[in-house]
Length: 281
Ligand code: PAF
Image (cartoon, rainbow, N blue to C red; front, side, top):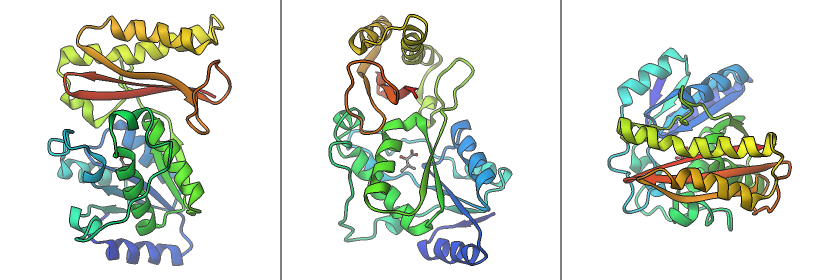
């Protein structure tokens, strides 16, 4: 496995593989790898011949009062995991490699970026779109892998790639959960044992909504959201940012459950923000 820091090194290495006709798979990450990332890498390994993983804690997707400085980082541990997973190339750029002095071009998807997460994290998706587009331009993968856990991110990236005629296929992979149902996230490490239990209320709310739809055939979104909110709001110390049901195709709000909708939620426990979702496909 090679570990490189420079854009030109990635390009040269990937070009060499492409000339041999190899299919390039790409998994962009911010490191501190967990089972969710590993599942993306395993899928990429299955479906491509040469797998590239990037590790870059992207400063432009964090707000001023967010956790950029304390975001968990452990590059040695990450490299060890990637080695075990037999990844071919790891790209670990410095901030100035991605954002050299004078960098001044930004990408975002109108309407999609300002709602849901975007309401609570202004400019977050502008940072995500810009860095993902840059990474796709650097790696030029045939296939790129993203988790459904960050559903709005995945939907926005698919839209950007579509709108801008980028060649990489964007593949969404299922959310990986801990034994108790908590969605795997690098930010779970911030939670104390007590808060971790509280955090489960979001998953429980989603499960309750699923049960109401599938078993009790409730399709009225207002009712479903009210039931979900009840569960979250009964948990002391948990602040609900939003719980909404929207279409996967364009994030528009729906009134009744139909095919292709997603329930998206975000909660805050102290200063830890967690998101989760549930799809009806
Ligand atoms: O999901 C993430 O880890 C990040 O948002 C991504 C896609 C690597 C861009 O920085």
